[in-house]
Length: 616
Image (cartoon, rainbow, N blue to C red; front, side):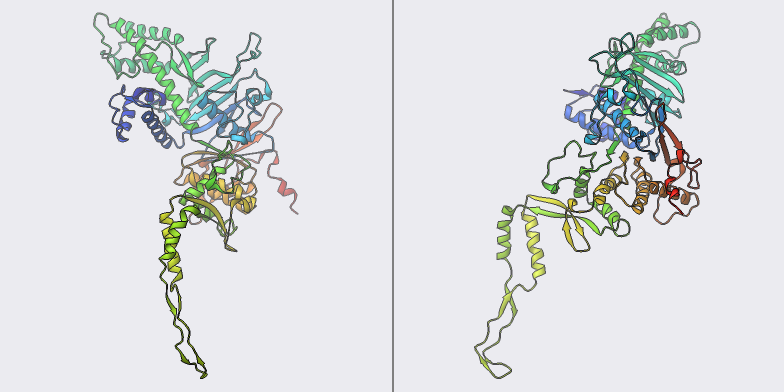
């Protein structure tokens, strides 16, 4: 189905001129004006490229995340997100629920389904069990709250122009079951979006709520935002020089105020998107509405009725695009990493747990030389001390090898390598008949290399197989033949070395690693988050050694005595969270990190104090 340029602009919350400029940069000849039509393949490619550009620009766009009535959480909890976000807490306190809530938000926004068991990212590592299972205390009459704090520079279009200067922007979604007159869930109904609200600097600026006919009605548009919006729209889209104070301005505002309660959206997947009754040609360039002297007030009112709804719809789509862009940056690694098949080169079984279980990481190491080199450096004797090195062994078909191998053998230069004795007497005086010269290959090493090169050049069907070389015995082994610590940490290494500008959520990155290596993970995450890769990490962990290494680097950064090669890290880069269960539901406490690499207050409940009990 053909796609118009303005449809892509609206979907991503971008201005037409920005989209057209990017189309020109990418060499898409059909994109000349907003109404230009692209075939679906070109449109899908173009949309993917635009999303990639946005994701790169918004590498720190998610500033906090909120969860309410989800699993262990009752009241909405705010989770500050920093490049290094570490989540601690006792077992079953709800710390994993923070990551699970993000996975739920991404899946629901992407698919429109809130009654979720498994997510695409979570695979077999996460089973949410559906709405009635993950809602707090399994009370299906409650509303699950999902919120995201976004950097203002993630907004484009109308939202970017009017809210780009805001210091804090928050999008809040409420999801719940349809309820009957006494507040009980209606049988056979599915959960859906109940309310949609946007705050700027703590002030509610826009709110939509669900109506019985499955639409989302605009309940509120902030007065401080509405007046400048109307003035800007009339200035851009009419021939009037301005709207004078007095009757004309009052008439325009009255028309807009009467219009707003009648504006309703339909939902595309989970989020509101299309404005009902939008009677303006969607992709038409900024057109001027003629305003006559004799009918000035009437013309201004009609122009406002025509253009203000479109601007509000563009506003909502711009916010949605910013939210979706951040959620699409999320990747996930579960707490128990799986073993991929022994022979990766011949395996086509990626399975539902391919990503969450870390199986794909081994394939990344197999295919990406730079990632493989970085992993080998970490696996080396100075850190992991396993004496293993990841390498590639090229495999080929025996049938394809027969002919080139025969030709190579026939082409071996057979020469005299040792001269025989001539007939006569030897040094002892005894007679003999003499011996023939000894023939062979004078330089076997060079010829072997020539034969191998010929085979590589002639064998078309080759497979690169991943092997681990045991450097102590020079023995090649597979990933299934080494200790479990290596198998569990390698996917973590791949996320750190291969991901870029991603939100990387990992449960128990330190699992099956001894304490020294848990500390080394601290440096790994610092470099990946604050170096050139600019990833954002959400780490659910029990490791005291991991946080101590990060605190040490904060202290060394403050004192300007970082070891050579270490990446600086400041208190603004670290968010340490403690999840504490209470009778009313778990709460999230932020542990303030000080510049000297310590905490401003003690751990709640004496967490990490167990080691003190065992000291003499």
